[in-house]
Length: 255
Image 1 (cartoon, rainbow, N blue to C red):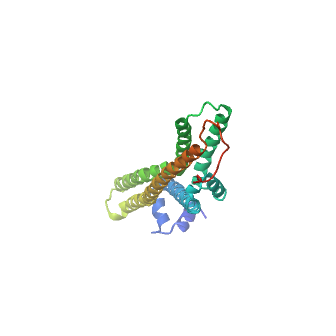
Image 2: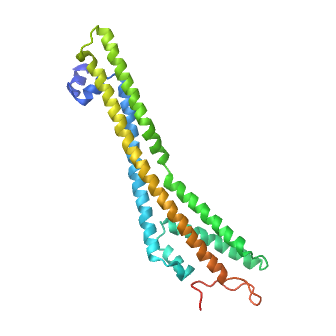
């Protein structure tokens, strides 16, 4: 059995594979590129969907279980139960900055600037928010690239199919539908595959951008709540004339 006979058996007349094969090697290469882009696109879509869903779920569980007005002790306890939540990571970053400055103030009791103290915690929270945003938006650029480039790659396959159709007309000296049909069919397949690749990528990109924006707003709001919490803790531990630096007191202020 020769190669042509094997190809003919694998690609019966009128099948999709037959149409693709008749479009020429350039059309086949275009379709392979689009197929690879589609696989990458769906892999990113599934991965980002699972990642952002976990972020929403873990953050919701943390915020539902914690009461910031109960003070640092309660937040520290709850954060240990939701280690994979962005809310926990934000709190740990802010708390680490708080403890570092607390140690510095204990070492230099005449160097307590409450405004600067709060500013440093705020900058640490902002830095952690930027890091979380970068993780949320990771690979979204790939979806944007696929959604914008796939139609043009499909158009390339369309153009090559039409060129092949006109070449067949010139080579055979006939303009019947039987002569141009293979090239036109391959061209239409390339267009369809390009759209099939681009549309899910575009939809996924828009959905994940909205989810990332919503999470970003939630993080900014939670960051402000944390800043209020630590500002309250700083007030609880402020210096006075008799006790230059009292021990760390966790929990709400006693009336």
